[in-house]
Image 1: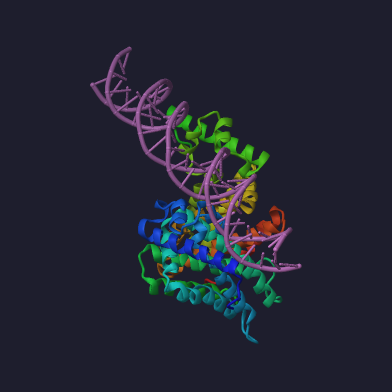
Image 2: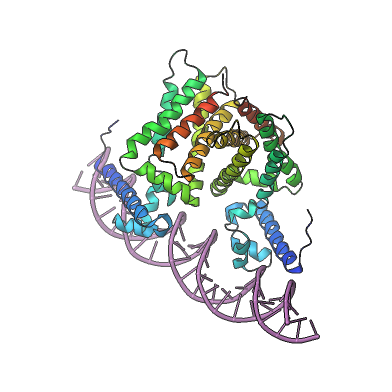
Length: 200
Length: 200
DNA sequence: TGAATAACTACAGCGGCTGTAGCCATTGAA
DNA sequence: TTCAATGGCTACAGCCGCTGTAGTTATTCA
């Protein structure tokens, strides 16, 4: 997991991390759209142009490491136990993706900040949803490979879409009525269970 | 339905319509991001500033009339027949929202163009997904009012989210493998049926 | 040690989007 | 019919996200 990286690569990761941390700090202080990319770059002591060498858009700096979450889910699917049911695997994958990573970067507060900003900043919300959609395609493909007999090219995406849709909607709803982390968590789990019922 | 509008309001609608038509035509000709807002305004013979008096963003010109679709679904829920089951009402509402409106503006080609562009243009896709999410909240609320005994504040959003998520994912998947309108339609119906099974 | 590579930089520029202030047609009341 | 209020539209100026390009410097690898 811990790769032996060259000096060049390490420096690159360092500036990337500096950009992320600067962005998070500034967003927390002043709010998302009161902070310009130029300011983030300034705080990280790099040129503004460099920001866009690391992140495609301003929103993406908050979605850093999102790929890791998807990988966790893909692993969870690959690690399917013998005789494990479709619904069980799916729930386990979602659980990994959401909560394992959640706990991991809760300490840094990134997940919380992201959730809060996603609920309030339309641009960020939109980008986040789009990320979910592309992730869904990967999950659907992996799931179909794991259960080739019970899933076809329509039901696999539909099932994953239902899961992600249900979880997002319930979480967003909970966030908007001001629920705390635990309640949000419960709402998400309940949504997962609901969809899991649609597969036997 | 056909309101008696004042002259001022009619003029406003006319420029709005001119903007939409100019945008659609230009997008079809040259593709979404090869067209600037200034060009759209030019083609509609208004100032660029006027464009943003009618639409919040460049993407929004393609999402015009989307509210109408949501209203159709809300009506469908309100028109619940006596003894109609939750799953039936939900499916009927989704059906209204997607296909009734689909048929209606298929003639103008708007739905088709929108679907095609949404599959290829990230910015548009993101905005579309966001629209779905906000629509979901309204649908969930209406549905909960119609079935107060079987839905709570968590399951209602979850259920609607699952529906929309499943339908979007299956449609996107079908579009991306190059399916024609009929196949896309079937995939969406299949997704709806899948989620409907999770409510008894 | 020298050549290739790649992260970074400065600079110039496009285009989405906004604030502002003013013009003019429509509107509704006197 | 007249006049003040309204609101859709315009020009103008400007911010900011984002990109292309060309050049500099540090690293890698042969």
